[in-house]
Length: 251
Image (cartoon, rainbow, N blue to C red; front, side):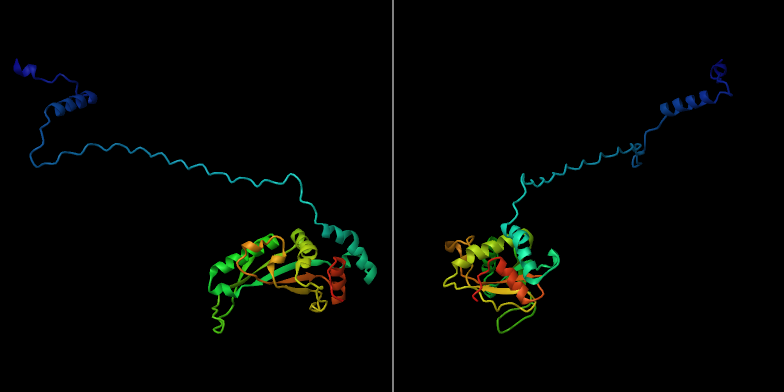
């Protein structure tokens, strides 16, 4: 009877039933691990993908505010178009208005040799020229070392600025009508300062002749060189052009 009871009644053709029975048997009759024997590591869970950090929103730069009205045309530029060109065409017999000479640029140059010992002097000179010209100048540096003047190559020794277009005509207007009459013992500018190619050079001993400079706030009196570059082919044409802009020549 005992042999009949223990006889397996499962169908040998059923593979699933045999697998389930084996699994139950293994689970029930599993032996505990021996001492010193490592337990099998649990199965590793699949790593979850980390969410990518969101980029911080880039702050938009404020747009430059355009002026509601365009800047007015300088009065010397209007004077040149309306009267100076006609005057030069009659005087020199030009056939076209494009042949008439015109002012191309104005360069302001200031030498600051004292800046070798003190850098604040250069900052003050740049500040003064910025007020005079209306735009920031560039700092000029020495090209080679000169032991006599205690200068090494690359030392800042001056500043200069180049004016064109609207700022050029505005500066020329202030130079002729406001700055020159404020020069001490002014009796006119020299008519011999042309370089033979239609360009004019003049020197200013004091920067406080310009109305933008306050005498109480300057640290020292500095001069500067002013170069007016024109498209004239001769000195006579350049002199006639500057005379039309009311330059006060001596002769």
